[in-house]
Length: 195
Image (cartoon, rainbow, N blue to C red; front, side):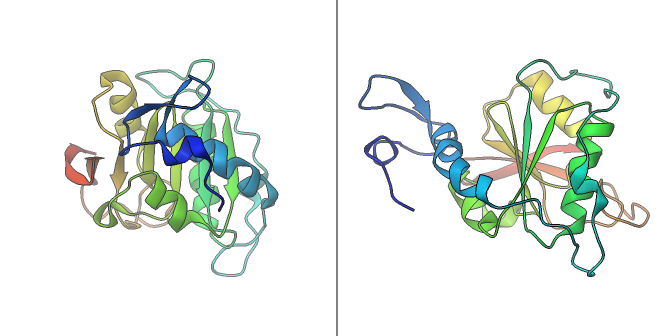
């Protein structure tokens, strides 16, 4: 990826820096702009890791809202996911149908790079990387935790449900244990909530 002068001026995740044109841009926002064209070229490829089709990729994201902080205009959710992952499409559908968010599912082979640029520490890594407002939501995070994040607006880069726990949104099977959601900021991971 070619790095522009604006991107070279950016500081740590969540920090603000002035661009050459005098505008203020967060590192995360610069990442989205820089990767937008490349990711848009990756089509919403059908198929999941088991080789079946993933009809959820064609969802329009419409649905009912959950309780808590209801989606507002401008709350587009972007889910960056591997072209072959079915659970990512199911998670995107969950955010649309259960959360009421307009969801843009972007299939890309660059999820690891997107995750790293968004400041997600390795110990907080999940299956896919989602953005909403100025936050990163990593992995199969339940709506209850997202609602808490958007309602309380803590000074963090984002939240995560590390790994791919059974029974989490988009994953099959029963929930086997409480989901321990963590927050992360500047490479530091801390407990956020339990669902």
